[in-house]
Length: 188
Image (tube, rainbow, N blue to C red; front, side, top):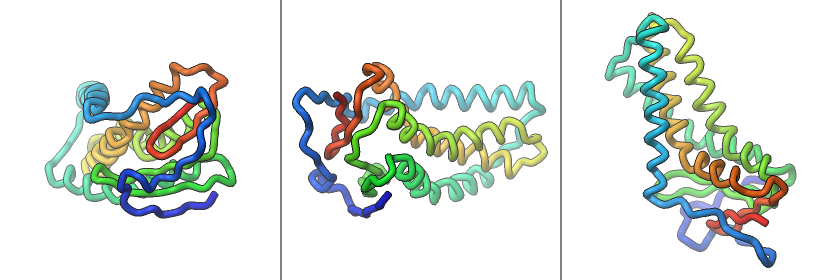
């Protein structure tokens, strides 16, 4: 895998490939797509409730929340690198940034299963595993508990576009091939 830094996405500088006839695009992510954050917040509220009622309680503080945010934010580049290592072997992966954050793209065609893995892997490592650890550590470890909860919330919430991609991919035929060209994700 070769990683290339593009810099700021300006609307035209993402790599494009010639698409085969009949290739169809996945729906675009819009500002309204952020509605998927509501179930994510609900799941977190449910986890916090379950831990507070059934697993011995919780001990959050504003200072620990802020520290959790400060620890979690620098891991967003790691999130994108985790996407990058999941693309097919020998791929050229492009990293960029926008007003909304960092991004990763690759024009190598891949299976639906591979693209689901590309989308899910960073969230599992930086979001779901810390959430599980948060749920099982005793509430007496207040700093660690709060930090893990906030860290997990940042990285699961920050993955909402990845989850939207997965929801769209699950509707496609199982033998479809996925390819990214510019800002469009296409399938055939």
